[in-house]
Amino acid sequence: MEQILNLMNQEAVKAFEAAGYDGSLGRVTLSNRPDLCEYQCNGAMAGAKKYKKAPIMIANEVAAQLQKSQVFEEVNAVNPGFINLRLKREFLTGYLQRMQADENLSVEKAADPKTIILDYGGANVAKPLHVGHLRSAIIGESLKRMGRFMGHKVIGDVHLGDWGLQMGLIITELRRRQPDLPYFQEDFQGEYPQEAPFTISDLEEIYPAASKRSKEDEAYRDEALEATAGLQQGKPGYRALWNHIMRVSVADLKKNYGKLNVDFDLWKGESDAQPYIPDMVRFLKEEGYAHEDQGALVVDVKEESDTKEIPPCIILKSDGASLYATTDLATIVERRKLYDPDEILYLTDKRQEMHFIQVFRVAKKAGIVKESTKLTHLGFGTMNGKDGKPFKTREGGVMRLENLIRDIEEEMFRKIMDNHEIDPEEARATAKIVGLSAIKYGDLSNQASKDYIFDIDRFTSFEGNTGPYILYTIVRIKSILNKYRSGGNTVEGCVIGLAANESEKALMLELSKFNEMMENAFEEIAPHKICSYIYDLANSFNRFYHETKILSEENTEQQAAWIALLELTRRVLETCIDVLGFSAPERM
Image 1 (cartoon, helix red, strand yellow):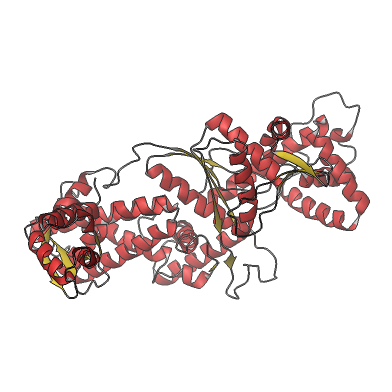
Image 2 (tube, rainbow, N blue to C red; image 1 turned 45 degrees about the vertical axis):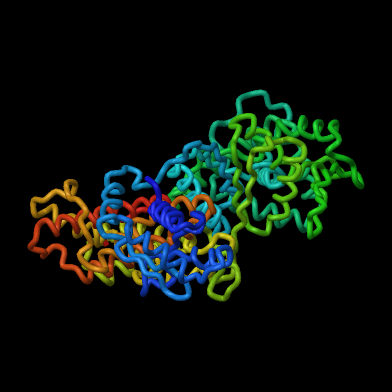
């Protein structure tokens, strides 16, 4: 379906042309004075200089043409030259009826679907997820769902940190603790054990201990570096241990990402890029893109238009070791070969901006990606505590993600039990659903690039701009629809009618903005725009609900029209929260 604003623009273009003016002046926008009108057109102001006429004269002539339109019920030209517009109720009702009949709720799917790879995990194996992983997971999952809703093929990749010194440290610490394991026996000829010699809890203790020791004991660090090299060169025992580490870690990561309703299509890591590195490095050397600088292999990426210093991208260190840039470039090589994406979108902390500028420039300069391939980095801000500093535990440490989720669920459970007489088991299940909305909405309602304060009290509130408030609104609508059905009625056959009052029309106007909002939110990589929209929609519904006695209405035709409007509101709200990555319970 065409966006309602486009239909209004078409009317304005025709009106300007009919009045003898340039049709491009006919651009309608949402009113910045909703107390005066619903929409406005300021084209007469822009045309005054060109036509050497007072803007109010132009506005009056155009308004006379617009008054003939079947779209507007009220058109007023006001000084100094604005045109104030109100939509005709019949036009708005017809638009919503078409929206009601459309399985995509008026959103036009992409005419030319793109293949987009979304890199939004970045967790390190053998470590628990902590609050620092929250934003990439939540924002990335919503972007994946947004892209798919708009008709694109979006492939989510966790891109694990599974290669490098951390693996060498774990292997070294294991060898110190359990030297008799077959993985460390040079002459071992049999099959390595199927069962890992450690649990995820063991790994979560082993890695920090090894990391701490490596900073204090140079010989130990050298041993870990040697183990890392052995792993990367394919030493069988070390590879077998690495496979164990991966299986145990990935199973735990899937469980914890699952608690956030986040999943990935690809569970690849830095290790998957390793086979592509030698040929890529050779190509960069032979084609003259890379050169040696103080023993390191670098690619110059500075451009004349740069206003700040852009250092060369280091491909290999002086000892021949690869870096994150090397792995990321090799991953791009792999992604082009396997998926030929139109776009690769990376989600990381915004402090990694320079890294991605360098990597993207090398990829484009050397033709590692096609010229048409879009490379995008969305850098997100920090999640802070009420003190304005990065969110920590009460003891000052980094909080584990599963503990944060547990704390939110406990707070929601307490509030649900305090407010209602409800079975504790049902309250627990509801608390999980509502708690997830509190976490996700609390994050996504902020612009991704900005820091924000994680406030448990505010995020779990049933009032204000919060996830629980949005869910409470949805549950209220479901309750009314269920009561209507319990009276022997069917919702499916109900048709939206003309707005009976101003609050109903305001709700209808909000619903009509859905397709434009979704398209803009996707194009601008801005999930916060969906949050802003559903908050406005929820407020409009609640105003309408408080002013309208829906279930006690005696006029069955009017009641059915209101029920149809509620059902469309429910569909839009639930579609939006699904795109944001959470759902609503049946009751709260």
